[in-house]
Amino acid sequence: MRLLGRRSRQREQRPERGVEAIRASLEPLAPGERPGAVTAAAILALVMAVANVVAALAGADVADGGRIPFTIVSTAVLVMAGIGMLRVRYWAVLGFQAVLAFQIITLALALVRVERWWVGALVALVALALGYLFWKLVRAMARIQLPERGRVG
Image (cartoon, rainbow, N blue to C red; front, side, top):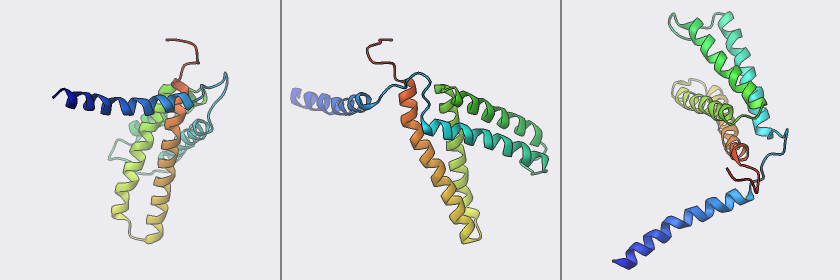
């Protein structure tokens, strides 16, 4: 019985060693440094905000009767995330990742209704590109959150 308990504790400690190895390989951000993925995400967020406004002004029907409030809220979220990422803020990267996750899920669901192969290929390509950006932001977030070596707290 005791042997079983020791094995389960050993199994629980193995992933922690891997996490520590990954943390040790990360370099904290230098003052004024911004990872490339964060810069790309900030630019994408601001472009999406402009596209939101342009689509609303062009009369794109986003929701039944709720087009203006939806445009205001979503544009405000994108602008806040874009500016926050330009300032290398953890909360902004995390919030934009939530937006990316929603967009990826929406695009994946849109593939069900695609009628032409080239539209499906384009939608899949955009979803894959957003997924790649999402993945690159994970490591950038770890570096943003990582305290300087030798500093505790």
